[in-house]
Length: 130
Image (cartoon, rainbow, N blue to C red):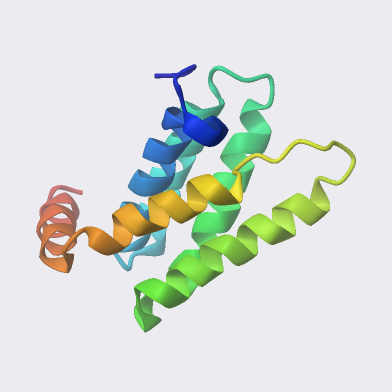
């Protein structure tokens, strides 16, 4: 999955990691969201020389989105995008965009299509185990 690209240069790996990160954000628990973001950041960065930047970007975006997740899906998406804007500003020394906005947009559509009952069922069981 690491090198599979869709049309317009969209990375399938990043798309899956973004969507799963949104699932973690929707749990409403900052701890679960951070864990999911760390794993997805590491998974997205494994085939790259910038694994730390990937992990940091996913965690920072997830942190901001999780803070606003209690206000709904759209506000948490806005938080994720805001985190990405901040990280892109901070990483101006290199013209390397960790999470392109087209991938965030497609991941957002997938996240919005999924029903809330699915999220509640998954994370209720996950919280009972941990």
